[in-house]
Length: 315
Image (cartoon, rainbow, N blue to C red):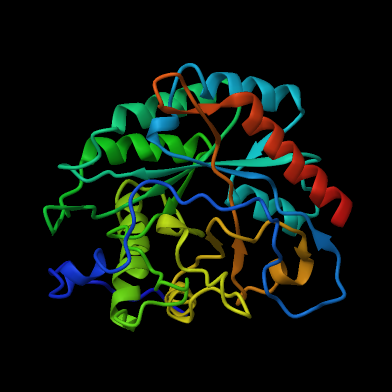
C-alpha cells in the first residue's frame, strides 16, 4: 500500500484524542514474558532482543553510563529495530543483541523542555559504542493545541543521528492513550484518529528528512503509555485500528510493554504484510531515603540478562 497524502489542518476532535483513559508517568507491568498471539507455525524461532524503555528522567549521570558499562561487560550488542530486522532477514543476528529505546523526544519548536537531556543520553550511548531508538512525538499537545511548527535545527541534528546509526520511530502525533479500561480499543477512536496519530506522524518524519536529502523509512511505532495492545483480553492482539493504519505505512514493528518478549517464527519477519508486536521493560527503580524513585543500573542489567536467558532456553 502507498502512503497517504496527509494535510496539516487542525482536527476538530483534538480534545478527544488525549483525554479518555489517559494516564501520566510510566506503566509498570510484571515481567511475565507472555506470548504474543500468533498462529502456530513450524519455523525457526527468532528470539526477541531484550528491549529497555527509557525516558528523560532516566538520563542520569549516576545511572545510564553505569548501565551501559554493565551491558558491555555482559557482551550485549546494541541494535535498533531496523538494524536487527535486517540482520534477521540476512541470517546474521548478533549473539546477544539488545535494544535501547528512548521515548518522548519532540522536534517541534515550542515543545520538549528535556531536549538537552535526550542529547546527553545519545552522547553517552554513542561514547559506549552503542546505538538506540528515539520515539518521536511529532506534534505534542500543549494547552490542547498541537505544536506543529518544527524546529529545523533539531531536524538537522536528527539527520546526523540517523546517519550515525540511530533509529527514529514514530511515537505518534499527539501521544494519545489508545486503550479502553480493559486494554481493548477505545470506542471513540475512528479510522481517521488512527490515521492522524500514526500515518500522519510517519509521513511528517519521512518528509522532513527527505527534504534534507535523507530518504528514510519509518519502520517502528512505539505505542504511548504501552497502550494499543489488548493484553487483558482472551486473545491478545494489536488493536485492529492501529494495525490498519500501520499498513498505510512501512511500519513493521509495533512496540508496547506487555507481552511480546518470547521467540517468534521466522515467517513472521519474512512476511512483508505481517506486523511484529514486541514488548519492553522499564528500568528497575529503587526508593531513596527521600522517597524518590531512582533507576538502578545493577538490577536493570539483571532483568535484561534474565530476558536474554529465558529466550535462549525457549528458542
